[in-house]
Image (cartoon, rainbow, N blue to C red; front, top):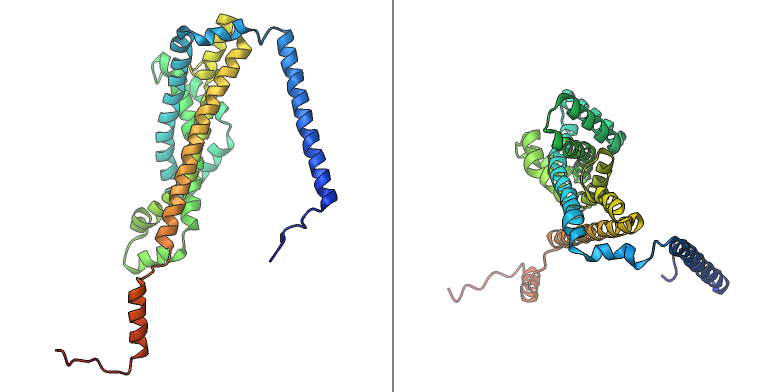
Length: 303
């Protein structure tokens, strides 16, 4: 079957139109980029002295590396807590008991709807008012709490959808061998669901890492906060934001690559686990020969 089943293949005239639109779009983008760079150059933002501080060890050791450490610490702790909270809430939403299922559903839907920044601001004010943590930890605790509650709710939905995506025969087979609903969930359904949703869960790491930048609003010492400090110290705020933005892009790209590798690995494992079992050609021939001589008694003369 030739051609596309979704739409007609473009003809020569359509191809010329597509080419013209593409060229015009590229020219518009280049023109906009040139206009922005020209304005930056006119304001002296592209001067070499604006970028030289990033070639010195002071900026990296006193600002960028501590900010990177703060970002990674908040992201790492939030990932662990979000996974735990997400699995618990996801299993709770799948419970057969309404008194467990409904509260978990309300929690998940509520924290998925509330903006992460609002949760951080609220928790920061709460921790500061009741002095739950040392004063120097208020911002870190608020960032972790906000990221945990939001991303834990997202992970809960991933777990729930992963369990629903499994064949119904999995749960029925567990019930047939006498497993309770709890044991079936813990031993059979949940491991398969987490494995199936692992690429999406790993991809959620990118969201957590990016959202740590919201801690800038509550004075948490992360990369974005350090970019502002560098800009105020060296009078190169634009250059500082560009460099810090490039670091975020690099880290998120590495996490995306990891997510793609995990997804590819899981797909290969799925194909190898679900693929047909093939016998050796000699065995198949022997089986065929045996099937064509079903009426012939075996030769026991040698026994």
